[in-house]
Length: 176
Image: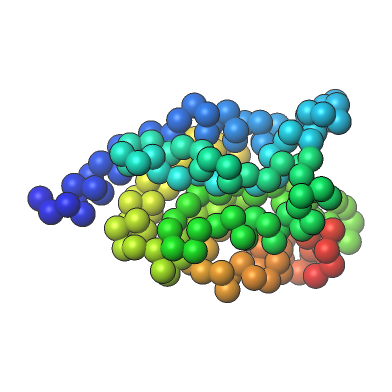
């Protein structure tokens, strides 16, 4: 068995760590009664990667944006999220999108599978074959987006189209 087949066999048994599930549940449940300190600690965006041994999906250390960062160290959460993505490797991400239609303001979690063209083939195959493991744990996600390069992300309008098409008038407070 060649090494790529061996890696894919291993990847299909990839486990999602409890820490990843906990982060997802925290992002999914919006606590209306949360005090300001709790709100600041909520995650706006986070990246997940495969562990070094390729057996687990784990948090990508330091790759997160907290609500409390916005307006302080983060001017535009969407732009900062795009900059967090590694240019030459795959990742999974959760992005808590805030947007407005003509009628209402909304928030939705978006599951993103980042697989840039420049990523090694082996990495793309392992991440693709492990995607279902993480998706199964992220119950209730309405929006999924596979992104294969920065050109797909440059325009925030592309994310807006995934969320609700032409009905969306702002994303992260920025008019489209």
